[in-house]
Length: 244
Image 1: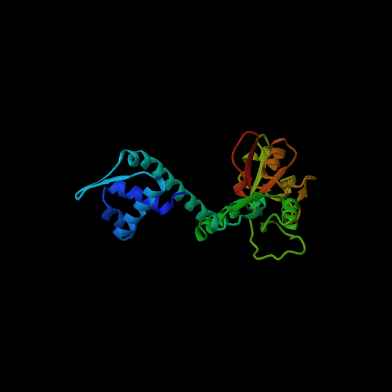
Image 2: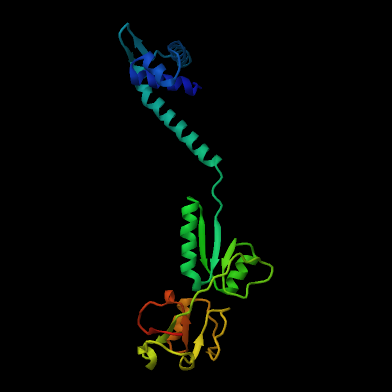
């Protein structure tokens, strides 16, 4: 089996039609390149170049072997590149569970981490209180953005407040045209799980973990939902008004 360096010398001499230029490209001396070609010719039993005082040209056999030599060198370069890639540990994925009510905040966290740690693999997982607790307990999530009370046994690093400024109503609700509502007029309320119950509020029996499901319940006339403005987008069956 011919040595890869000898094959590289052959390909560069054939490409440059010069031992000296091939030697310069390889960072070798001209005698070293000449010895590599002689060694390769002995091993193959084939003359590769015709040499004159002014020119070096591949023989018929050398010209036929040149594409194969270049293919071998390309494969060797691909092998080295893939080995280098595999030698660098892949970035560990960070799984962040977040309550849908904090979706906007989770997006900002993701953007900031991407700016500080390019290439970081951050997986955002929407999860209600129970699902987020399960993600943490099983070790599937490194952290969670969730509503209080926090599950026992986990440290909390920061606390933030998400204002619930809108009330989602069925589109045909008599209050849907109001610009502002008080809780005593709101009726049965759906609230995100873990959110403190405002004084005077009447709660619907369902617990809210998923914004889409909550708004579907609103559209079905089951309840009204106090929510952050980021939850609400106008669509058939529901509308919103500001709530105190």
